[in-house]
Image (cartoon, rainbow, N blue to C red; front, side, top):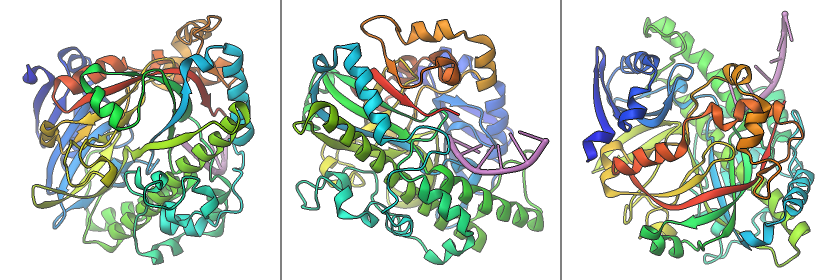
Length: 473
DNA sequence: ATGTAC
């Protein structure tokens, strides 16, 4: 059974481990293997794999897990990608889907969310009282107390404990690299959603019977309304990539190293330039988790406006799919890159945050617009892939090809526009976000089937979209 | 993904 969902592909520069069912594997573009062959030329690499949502990116495919030993490791800003710390967050509400049955009410909710959450291009966030320097250095711990509505007491501190990591330590001298305008822009963007595939979505839950016990331990119930957020480190992460990328390209030229792809940047962790990148990448991870936290904060305010003070929203989990960091696996220290890949730890794994030690933590996997998203949990067998699973559906069409090939009517019918099940979208014109239509993506159900079939993780709940908030240019 | 220049 298992071998149908896993292929070891031998390339001139090394092996790439591909987790995908037969039809997804067959459909892969040969370019993903060209890209793997370039990535495998980075020295000392010990493991590289693709999840079934893999597709071509800049320098590296989205859907890559790439691993080095820490002691002779390399870091690649191209593998991490430019949206450093991009990831997912889910909040549970105390609403049942029947309370949002009326399309009119979903429209009102979306309108109210837009009051608190800026979605226009270049819009400023509503958090100018927050010191950027504090959150850059201390992550969630750098926020004023009023933005941690769950409080700091151990039992209730879900905003700080139900996250992959609430704070990243790094050498703060690295921050001197940036001019004032980088700081100003990042400050004004705190608590904004961004564009592209980023979204905030109101969904409802269907629990998977096989994992009902886990679902209930996490506080899920059938028909529960939840909030799913997908966003990243905005321009701060972009600046880190750009500044550090150009320094690393310069170092590579000086050292005479590289591959066939000039976009593929990397350096030995022992180099000061690489260490500087790691420090600043961590600053962007701090920014990203705070940004998602503030987006949730804004939406909680909107929820209280629409449903009254009885409205409650607790943090299920926040985790990332674009980053690199140190991890221990079976007593050895590794430097693990995940680019469009999600960590999914099994029950009893010591790296689970305390509230999820016994069950494994929730792994949050978004679908494309109008389709299901998933809440997963890792399986012990996932260790063969360093506990990485997919990060979403994965693109099959470029933005330009989607605009050319897909009509607004096709998009609208995928969103069930005009029916009582309509997924209400904030953007008046679907045309402005057609490059995000489900027709641009692989079928997420098939991706999840591959991940489950390969034994990497299990489904805890399927999440059906009810209303989506998107940014657009 | 993002900001910016064309």
